[in-house]
Amino acid sequence: MLKGLDKEIDYLRDAKTHFWVAFLGSFGGSVSITLSHFPLIPKIIMMIIGFVFSLIFLMNYLKKGVMIERRINFLKKKGE
Image 1 (tube, helix red, strand yellow):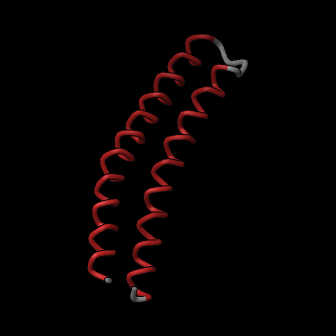
Image 2: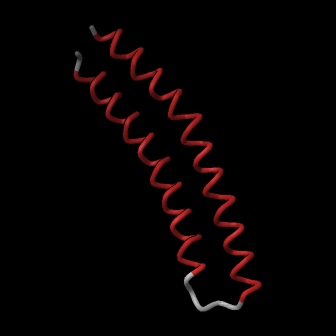
């Protein structure tokens, strides 16, 4: 394959990984809030916000992950 195509494929795989890391970071932050010593009401509010963001990041990963894989497969076929 061409060197430019290899770089673009690597970039797309990195982008897909960043979506996954954003989901895990948001989810982990929500879980760590449950273990903290905040008062109950702010803790519940922060947990709900964290879980909502983690779900948004997960949906983003699932939607864009499929699109990225299609693009990678297209580039691989183009480079052959």
